[in-house]
Image (cartoon, rainbow, N blue to C red):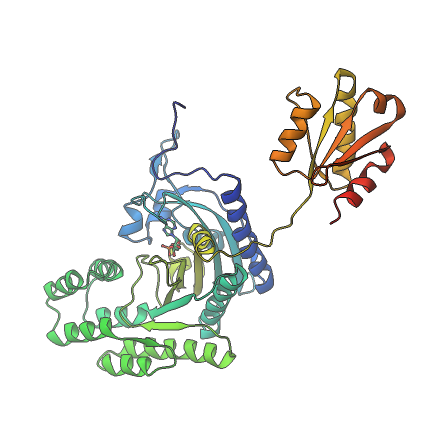
Length: 433
Ligand code: AMP
């Protein structure tokens, strides 16, 4: 038994899982290219202050935070947006907008480990900065739809809401920011009674509570009258009305674009991250109760970090959860099925030749391993068969003398001896079907 295990909440990825992770990452990168998002790479370790300032209590309290050897307060990134906003605030001054930025990598949260919830997980992250218009929100929704489609997923749906509706009400009722954030966190966890109790304790009027209670019940398909009902519900609250109109514009754009996205409006929807100011959304599939991704509009973060006023909208896709969804829906990855083989030196003298021939095959694009366990030919072939390899190249005494190799088609159990120069061609012919 090994003395060591992975740390709680951390996982190893074996070959199949690693391949799946890279597959999803590749899909995300493809979508980034198609939509014109440029990849940037930011550090995993950032200043604690940067990461905590607008992350929200939920994320803040779960950060892997520590002092580095230089006594700096730092943390492992729990998400990407703060890092991207820092970079843009510092380095993108006076550059023509918009900025379309993409990053992908691991993030860290001290969440309680359970299915689909890990302490190290992977996100692909898209940020669209510089536009406050609904077409920017629509783009982030469309590219998320595109990623889910590209990954091969079926039956996914979007839950969509607008933070501006709730913030509009809270601001007009003069709830301070700290209380607002607390209420939003509780609503995010669907702990509505506790959320309303906090509002009530601020002395907010009964009308406000009535509106909130109605809002959390209001749900419906984007093409239903749900936005009209939201608007009617918040008619006393000026900025909340503006927010519902903004949501309507985003939904209309998507609907008129002809794109088939299932959007479910949820008027009481809130998200844990505090920086959101506008439209927010999450993606789900029916068989998983946890979101595959989520995002929204955050118009003030870059300014808060000392940059120019830059409205922005973004999304983080949970790669681990997309992997789970792909496994559940049994989506074939369509990855390249490369033929593989092994070079077997039969004696001491042919070892160097084996290295040389293996290199030659690799240069021609063939995947090849070398027998390095000193096994006899029969054992080495048995192992290659067990591993479902396609061919073996055998170099014995006679071959060495004659400048030839024996090539064996492992599936058909056929063997040919050919000149070394003909090895690549012969392998390709033999394994062509
Ligand atoms: P957030 O940054 O909280 O908006 O999260 C974006 C996405 O990351 C979520 O929709 C999930 O798909 C994924 N995610 C969040 N927390 C975890 C976790 N602990 N383990 C795995 N995936 C997660």
